[in-house]
Structure formats: structure tokens, C-alpha cells
Length: 121
Image (cartoon, rainbow, N blue to C red):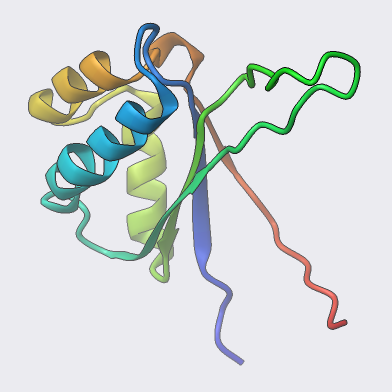
């Protein structure tokens, strides 16, 4: 049986002043290609953009804590652990860090790993 993949999950908030649409467009067109240059050993790179639903009481869209949930998947545990160590030390390439400062509210970024369980329906 093959070992399950290792997954890093990152919750990120857009920088104040950016619309959701501008944020998504910039992330996909500029940030993703930049990050791909440094993603050796990554087997999947998924961005899940949050679509707030209207508040039942007011009808207004709720402001969420995060705008995107990013998943970075690895098959190799050693590479995964090296990436975790780099994330914990905020040891990213300078051009990635500068782009993140332009695009994200980095103080609100959160990293986690997950264990997945799936039930067939």
C-alpha cells in the first residue's frame, strides 16, 4: 500500500484595499507562476477561494477571516518536512516574500497540516 501524501494547508487573507476579484486574479496570474519556480517536489498545488454567503440576518456578504485556502501536496516526506521547517522559519525566497507582502496580510497567514479521512457515499 502506498503511503498517503503529505499536505500543507495555508489560510491567507488578502491585503486591505484589494477586492476579492483583484486578489484572485493577481494570485493566479502573478503569484502562482512565481511560486511554481520554487516548488520542487510538489505533486499538487490547489487554491480554494472562499465565497462568503450572505448573513441570514442582514443579507450582506460576511467578511471572512481568510480569502483563500491553499493546499500544497507532497509524496516525499523528507521534502515535506523541509518545506515545513522553511515555513516555520519564514525562510522563503526574497521575491516570494515581497510578492506576499504586496498581496496578502501576512500577519494573518496560518499554516497547518491535516490528516484526511474520507467516507464513500
